[in-house]
Image 1: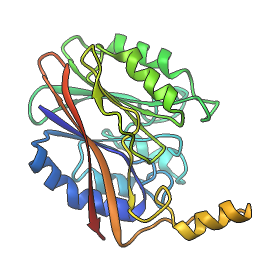
Image 2: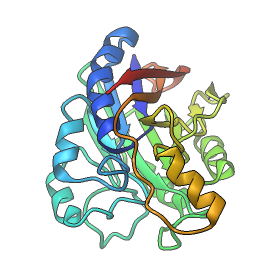
Image 3: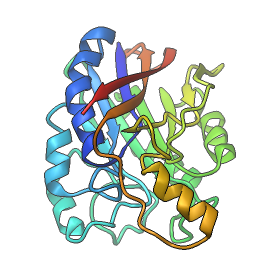
Image 4: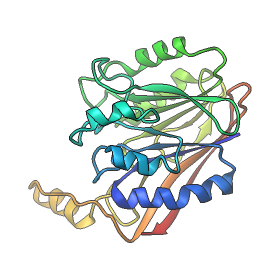
Length: 262
């Protein structure tokens, strides 16, 4: 079987690109299950209920990250969104869930786990390594296919998580830095890994933001608004993970990208 994982979706342009391209990618790569990181989907920071429903029209599950609570009212909305995950290593007092087991339309079940890194990230997050151990211990033995999205700044932390989980999960994919890494590989134990999948945002941008705004901030040192690129060519970065759903072992991972004009 094949699973499609899509990197951080940035703003309305990113959402429109996902809706346009995901049905095509499902057919092209024969993907039965689609997971999208949506933590920048609402105006470039966070998610709303309406944006979530928009993306869930073409995706099976959405994951989040450090911007989970940036949009006002989402702490209430997430309670009604069964297919949206926030980082599992947030405090248990926070609403929503950090992992779930979902039916795969192509057959079997898929467990999706959302983690937040700690290096250069939010100090309030718990240890992602300890958290994922606790989750794996709770999963039913019948669930073989497990995908982990580790939303983290440091490549070292994401690389380490891949090796930590090798042979125990189907795939470990990294998000957050918006730049795809050239290291898509199946590790010796049968776990597919890519340190960062990339983003869905402006093809001519800095991490999905207007180039001129980012250059002004870097060159002047002054704070300013970094507008999201909403129109023009939008780049979609993703990974196609091939696996045996009877064992959960990956047998391939391919980094892909597409562009579409919005």
